[in-house]
Image: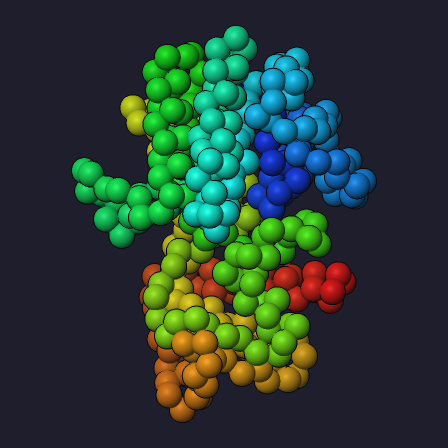
Length: 323
């Protein structure tokens, strides 16, 4: 059911200068919406981001002073992206609870006094064991996952309590060039391996590279989210996975990057597995890549492989311009 077709909305984005947040600001503004950006610190004027912002709130959302500023903007939609990363969440439980749980709670409580149509909470696939997510009871493996599961429960509670439609989004592994040079998006798998190949002329995998992950480009995230903004989601516990049919092993990703690197720079790079073991070409490099391409053709998904190549080329272009 389409709710907001042809209607432009006031959309407030927390973490608006982050990797996904900055791209959402661009995309949703280009769809005609008004963007309210909430950032912890001041962002220098940046073409392609600053010019997309209607209102910019700077401050820590855990503080009532910042929340008061949020309330005064009267948004139609809130997209909540602020989260402490996994490494820091494991180190500091108190901070993880503040950022990943308490902040979501305080924002949703503020929605009680506002006429918010939708609250979209970006959680994480780590909130559940992704391999067994269809089982009835599944426990997170990390503190990071546990805090996101708690934030989802809070979101579900307010979904029942308020007229606001509250949705939890579990995002798989995203990739694509960031908007800002110092973005934390360089910690993402594909971005990290591409940057490593550019700066060090090699790719080092910490494992044998055969584990498979689901990857989604930021453009697809923006496109899917725009659909969720416009349409009603009929689910009692509103958890939605943002994923794609792009499922690669880490070794496949490394081989694609290696291929793009050679085509772009006419130089070969070396791939290492298990931290320091040389991956030799005669050990089935071609069969791994060719089998992958064949599978994608059979599933009529070859466009995804080409899209991956194009996206990695865009990452190299960003690296050339900024590093």
